[in-house]
Image 1 (cartoon, rainbow, N blue to C red):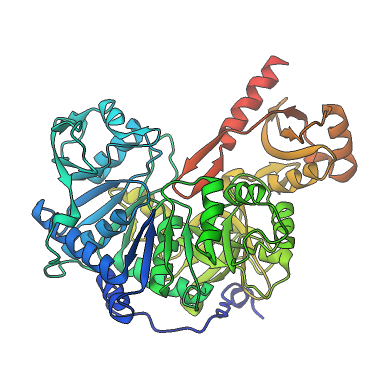
Image 2: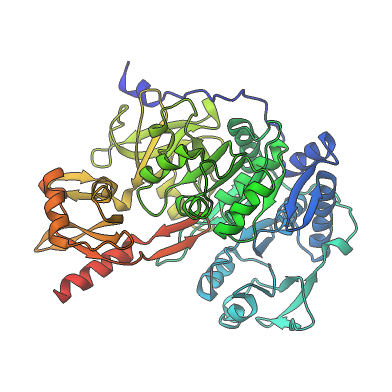
Length: 550
């Protein structure tokens, strides 16, 4: 087999392929569900159940309301809400009138929200007065309305008498969908134009805005439903991740497309999520490694979630293999996934027939089957690599994004001339053509002339007695890049740096052995729209500070 052929293998999905509706419209997805099962439960939002017919009506009301607010084709409508059925209705409604929904993470504060509203040219911002510890109005007080020339008004859901008549110097209107007529009007949306903007992980320049049309979102919803069994009898979905990110939204829409009721979780809490899983006999959910850890640790028993069929996860905070293997022993079916804002979440999933050690690896088989391609490129020579060799992951398929909004330079850097997306992730292909994700390219370190994934070192450290977790970064020590480790000790354990370094030296090549080991109680993390992620840049800063202190 030639090298090029090895890289272009496209394994078929285990699930039977079906035909995606050709028009690519969200409204077609909505009407398909309403016609197929009008009285079936579509969403469970708190104590409220919403049928397919009821959701269709709510989406029509959202479209009618948006038109009444002057929103139409090409307009940007920013939505800053926690997970609730109105979020989804506004998305469908915006698609109907031809507007673009700009998703805003509820974890964002004044600087990030200002950046997104300014960058997107949003004409309207939809928000709620407060949610638990989040005071949206107070965050707005810290923003400069003059920096947002395109913003015309703010719409408040659950507006109360204390809501001011103006915010950011703009008029405030009430969002009351139930009072609107259920007349969606004509479908003015273009299924191939930008229909939603997602934010990438924030950088010093602010997050980029990822453009997706209706077509990629709807087609992916159906493909995901068929691929992971959300169209099977008895399937039910719990949304643990926010809709403002692809991981949360794609999972919810996949369940809706498959006809599985979707249980909404407004914001993640381990105990609440565990309770909802069992109370609603949930079969599917998607989340981060830390989310599953919290739920499983709070739920005793050999089979804590007896209805579970497919629990997809992304490992964002640390090496998770040992915990995932233990979870399988308790009947928790953790399946490794891969995706990004640019190609959507659930882009691929590991096949269930694989050995469990491979099932829990990130990556897998593309849910788009033969329509998707994966290739691996050597990050130094630029050559395409055969199976088994690690390099940058490049992807092409029906879910590739349109580009970054108002950022042609970043778009040209990310999208190659032949349509492949440069992911910035390190991985390799198996012999069968399926993907194994290893780490972010920025996390890879060159040690002793070799490229090293820090997870390799972390996994060795975590096997030592008394080590609960470990994170490894590299910093300059004496003019040479050296690995250093931050270790969390297990409860009641006392560890010594010298002993750990000595133990590591016996099991690893000398260039991988941490030059220093520091003990901490926790790691700096950030809540992205797709899960909790360890901030390795802050770990590097901490390492430099501690090294300077001696």
